[in-house]
Length: 404
View (cartoon, rainbow, N blue to C red):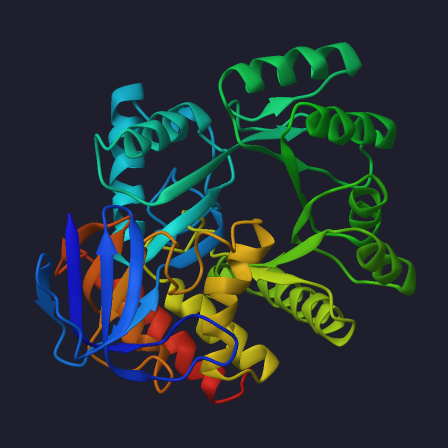
């Protein structure tokens, strides 16, 4: 299908994006064909008049999950145990729905961290084969080096066990690994896992929450750090020597802070995350943005809130965070030549909104159109969780009042 999106106000996703008014975006099948002035002859295209609405590249979520709806649990922490999901067919349907919800909210590319990779891989493949409309998905398998409650996360016992698992993952066409490590894990086994994953053409994301675990990840070749820990000069040097990037994720930490029994823990984790990203920014260490969707208080449609948290904690502009979630995030994935900005030759991943997100990030919460690889989704409607949205709005007011 060939579309001509006329009367478009383009925010192209580059660092210095400014509104480009009265433009036409021409698409041909899955790619952007050209960006032309409004005098261009659009004969041969299906014309869609945007009436001067704002057009951005699709959003890119570097840290997402698809196993739960993100509801705040009352009384006790959420359990990841298999019993939460009554059947494989139910889990698959939920995964499809959550992936679709991401797309309807403007996320056209996402890294899925691997809590339920069997369903995630099926959904990824259905999207790639055009059996369903959804975001471009890079799917992980999640590994740990110590026993966990969640039976779906593989635990690496030794080198032989790790190699057997990696061969299986490669056969399943898993895109990357997510490693969960803590201070007491076997560093030699972690090193071997990262090296062999790279040999199997899989990148490695490492989730850490302490300085020691962060050092283990950096010293042994992690491709990305999820969350992070307090950083010393040696951490900084290692970041600068490696092509490792940091992924900042605030929404789950905000979710903890909103629950009375987890408030203190959430506060400490927020402080740690802020310190980590401030250090990265001060030393020009690459930082991407993810949402942690599915974790408590983190829905599949609120990426704009994650951007608002970054703007608040680091005194950034709307332009800064919009760049971070588009072309910057594409660069972290090595995909900046095909996604992340509105340019001829790139995938036609576009979102359209009536209001200007350079003035108000919440404009991203109400989209008129989403286009993924040239497939158009008109007037997406998301059934939002009213009680949670009200609580998150109150939390945003708290942030804006500088009470956190």
